[in-house]
Picture (cartoon, rainbow, N blue to C red):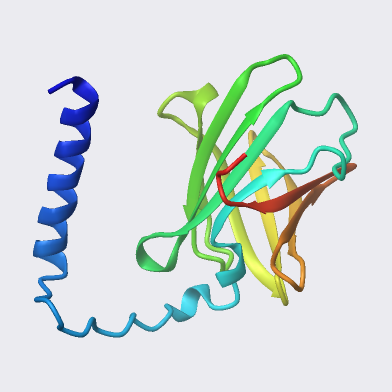
Length: 174
């Protein structure tokens, strides 16, 4: 058995074992209803998923990146995990992540440039339908960003200063 087959066999075993331990459903048994949404993240459901930058629709005061993606996922204690990666105009890949509740509570952002050390302090809060205000602080300074989700949930604008980054919902297929 080659390494690819071994890898997929191990993954399938892991999924089957996890399913048995977590789900434990016999054939024909009904699955329990999904848990209610944590009220701390109410109003943010449209963000969850993957987003890819639309470079032609975005505006940058300096050189635009070659590519950028962003993802949002539910995390522990009412937090949303935000992950991002950008391939800059110079070809450098940067990435990082943070997890925060959308109620203004500060959280730590980690970035590849800082290794395992905190890079920024971030806080965000829902300020309107599909609109979140993000405050990013570092070294005694701060700036405010706005996430604005379109009504149809397919476009996400991320803006700060003269920068407006337009993301489109992404299914990982291109």
